[in-house]
Image (cartoon, rainbow, N blue to C red):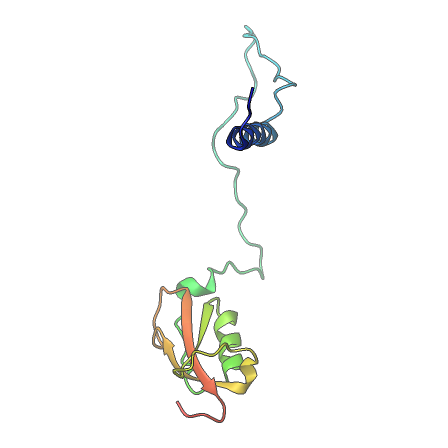
Length: 140
């Protein structure tokens, strides 16, 4: 019988898929114990309600994530590294781009300054802010 490479690959894939499924499934060799009906009343019925949550203690504060309520600060004119740090400290993700037409990567961000940003300062309900910068000795 002639076995083709395609047949071997297909068989190997099937075996690997079976192994992966077996690894992901709960252990089937140890079946869960079965329960039999009893005539005795039970003292506590299982509930499907979530566990109770505790209120914060004195001195503790419950804060919402910063990016959901924070307004985007104005970082135009700031040092790129400081602007990035400020945005991240307020919970925003930061995209950084070269504002020049050269499209350079910003490697040492302390040697750059922010020329523009998107979205504009004061925007709310955003998670990501893009800052467009040039090197310190360049003009926007």
